[in-house]
Image (cartoon, rainbow, N blue to C red; front, top):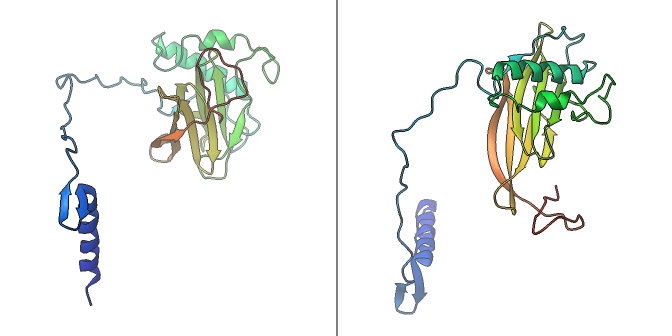
Length: 238
């Protein structure tokens, strides 16, 4: 009886032979030129970006200044609009108009919000979502500020053990969709190929105290066919 190892080796050789050529009664014959493999070429080898300065990392966790301590262990009951306004205002002052931390138009967009609980009909802040992303049984606040008809500032906030409110995720993008499941937050965005969308999966990183990117994948992008779009534009069905 042949050993499992020899059987696996024989199967591998057979598969290799099948891909390398075509078998006939006289043995193997060439399948033709399969192309030449080329090693990657590195461009601009001598160029490296400067490291980000203090506070200049868009996704870094940070306390939101100017807010009172939360009345409970989670973000439930906290005024979501006040949190977003305080965060955007402080980030804009720190950013000094560079656009690295926040879109320069965000503060002007927030000015459209009224003192109503939901900010009024013209407020660009989407309805707040509460979900436990850190796995400690306490809900985080997921908020989004639409800068224009395409770009959105996505922010996630949590309550630290001392009651202070901290931002644990901030990113700007074209949000084709945002999904939560357990301690995962997935952000779906269009790519240059309309057949695919990118999916960024964020999970809680206790050491960093923030939501960290754990996986970046491509997914098929079914298109909506019952919504009129100009020209040959396409839109994901998700």
